[in-house]
Image (cartoon, rainbow, N blue to C red):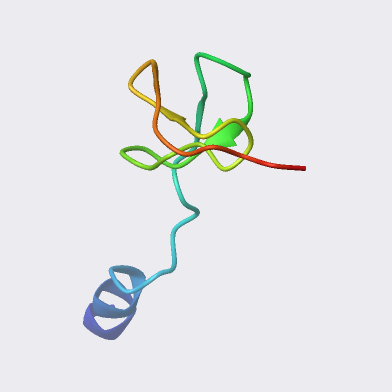
Length: 49
């Protein structure tokens, strides 16, 4: 039982994703949106397609 309890703490977790307020794409928290280049409502990076 102790071994299984210790191993359960090392389980891999899925990354938490939130929606970008500008374009709605899934983005990890505190990162620039790779789809539109915005961060906290401001355009930070210019995305060229």
